[in-house]
Image 1: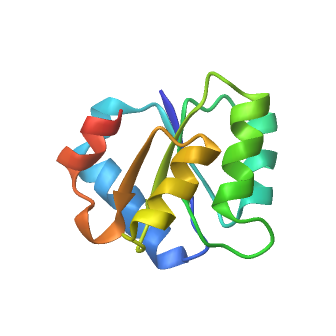
Image 2: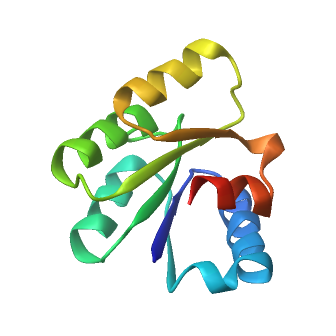
Length: 117
């Protein structure tokens, strides 16, 4: 399985990658990263990606727009929304865009990620 982490916060991407490398190394083949929805779509067009962990708010193209495009163009890719926002409206917007699950960043753990895979 190949995983793409999409977040405009470089420190968060690095911490999320570290969690995968230290705790979930047997769950993936390749980890990719992008800093916005536009870069995400570029990576997906060139690489084989199975799961995208998508931030909701980003510059250039946000997670809602990118999720809609992924769901429309790449039905086999599973999108998991990841955000600091835990309000019901934020969750609903991402799920309606096509995300299959939603993880609040403060609650990210190897177990939470495994449940989404």
